[in-house]
Image (cartoon, rainbow, N blue to C red; front, side):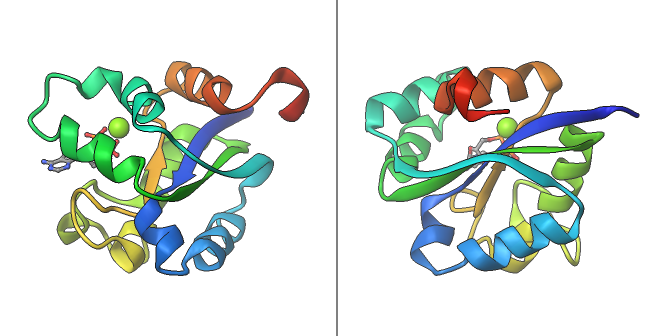
Length: 139
Ligand code: DAT
Ligand code: MG
């Protein structure tokens, strides 16, 4: 399959706990090329926009509060079959269900504080990458 792209964030729990390096090592070891990357912080308004698809869910308020509670690292990653392979690399949303060797198994604290985001489709990868990066930043 041709190379394509996904979008990820290292979430505030993992940044706070000193796991940026460990998570980037796993991403590199799995064969992803880092196309663009920045450390930044989401306002609660921006976090709410990013996760707007979940706004009717009971955990939305908690999710927005957590995602705006500290710094995050946003990145665009490239690899053959990037979206699906990255979802495999991060593991299940709830780390209690995450497979051995996955990023969430190793670094997530709980279903809410689960260390990393990964796009769930090619379309959302494009939308989410554009949320953080301009055209000039993602060659
Ligand atoms: P994923 O991040 O695996 O794509 P998702 O899109 O269903 O999961 O949910 C987005 C984030 O919302 C998830 O990473 C953590 C949080 N979340 C999901 N379900 C939750 C729950 N039952 N309780 C608390 N937070 C939850
Ligand atoms: Mg999701």
